[in-house]
Amino acid sequence: MTKPATPSASPSAGADRNVVAVDEHYIALTFEDRLRIFWQKNGKSVIALVVVVLLAILANGAWDYRTAQREREIEREYAAASSPEQLKAFAGAHAGHVLMGIARLRLADEDYAAGKSTEAGYGYEDAIATLKSGPLASRARLGLGMAKVQSGKTAEGEAALKQLATDATEPKGTRVEAAYQLASLANVAGKPDDVRKYSDLVMQIDPASPWLQRALMLRASLAPAPTPAGAVPDVKFPVPGK
Picture 1 (cartoon, rainbow, N blue to C red):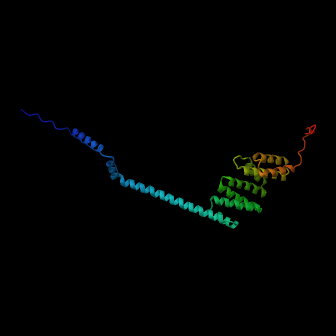
Picture 2 (picture 1 turned 180 degrees about the horizontal axis):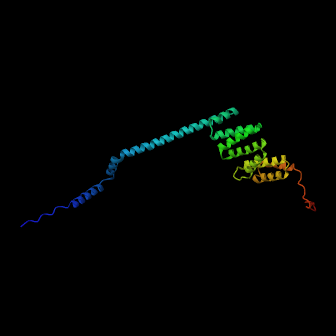
Picture 3 (picture 1 turned 180 degrees about the vertical axis):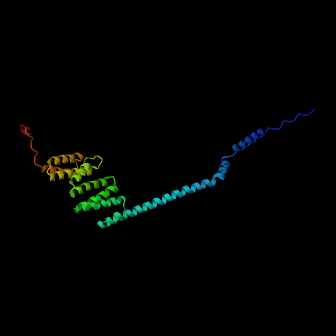
């Protein structure tokens, strides 16, 4: 009688036992063991990444340091530029820098004071293009308007001054000075109504401005406005007992 063959172990069963054994072995590892395995596999990559990050930080710090040093040098050059020739040289050497815009504004003011309206206009335009915004850029726009008036482009100049005077986003000091200049131009042109209008605007913008006193003096110098035909004069009688 043939003896029945003993069934052999299933390969899949053996494989399952191996998986279980590996899993159990991995679970049994301590945190330190897992950490050591991680560094054995990934240590070089992590170190390389850290080196790259450190080099980037050092490079950025060196760039910031060089930039700060360069800014200090430019500031020292600007502070040392006291004559028009030095300011022109500084502006030519540092195109686009904010201090170049301020230098051009200073030169434009000097040209305007000397009656060089064309040169002043170019200087104010350069300052506006460089400074772009802020009180000094607004100051340059005011200067450009006055330079146009000085050069005979009265309509363009007055339009620029009106824009400044009526723009609530402009600094108050610029607006009030532009309004006074409009009142002064109206007085020269013999336009009393405009003198009154712009002196009122000066008061509306800043009642505490020193420009208001000048505007009121212009207004006081005007002849009394004529009484419209048919209107009853505003006669004030004395109060009894006063």
